[in-house]
Image (cartoon, rainbow, N blue to C red; front, top):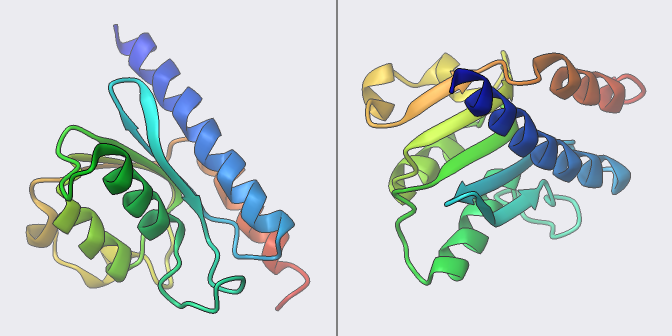
Length: 149
């Protein structure tokens, strides 16, 4: 049973990584997210802050909006989000407000990730698991920023 869960996490994180690669190809910070409900992607997104000239157009926000539209509901209580990089505080607030129960994170974001700024009391009802395909997610970020810094 545990192997099946790990295989499912790998499968869905690969979908999020594909979203991050879409962002990379568009010269956006390569972060991707998918929201899964009943073994189906109901929302997906990748960073589009440059394209949309919108500082809030993060992968997680776009995925939540798509999932809300798909379900015609504001709450995503039976859903899991897979995201390649640790969400920022804004995105974690949106995750909490949308009532997503579980977030599977690829790699930590030591500079702006929510865990640096937010007390665990803030997200007690959300299960957060770090390190799913961590190296692949981190490498995308390193590749993107190597020529920019």
